[in-house]
Image (tube, rainbow, N blue to C red):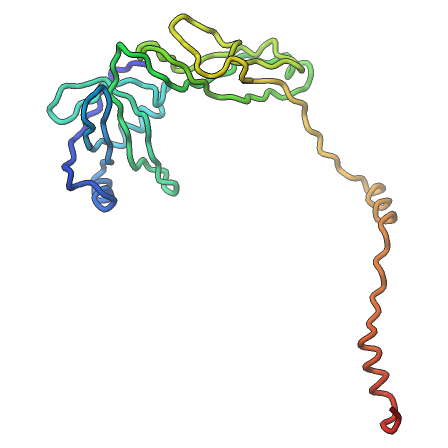
Length: 231
């Protein structure tokens, strides 16, 4: 999905790379990033994490194509191809941008959104289980969909919706195998609760624990009680 979003990046000198310098950069409210692709050299830059978070949380997410302007250079079309989060604070730590040639096809992963209420849920008491949430496809950058809808209205027990059931247009080439399952109906698992009668029967049927004979202790006491003159 193409947007009018403009991400302004600042170049980073080679000596500013490294963990310590990255920490200092984050203190200033920016995060380190790298730009590569389109047959050009990679460039170390810094960007605003708020702007990147906004793109990642948009409808098209990391598949969003936006304008990336590095320093005083001309803006170029780009995408986010990798990102790292702090596992504790959940803050963005690093971003990888890729320059995009709008005339060359890309391979991307796109979410699959299930629509409708499945017949197996409505009348058979089942549960809708989505096995696959993303599919990989190839298309021109301008044709990347934000998601692909899959209608599950007629789905019942015993049926499986697969990649082949997704809408296939001439602009999209599916890379994920056509026979891969996406959704089906599963049964509700009932938890068996034991009744007091069943618990009592189980206890009665259980073998009794063997009596523990404290032989060593008895022998010790007997020896202690024996007359001192007897052996």
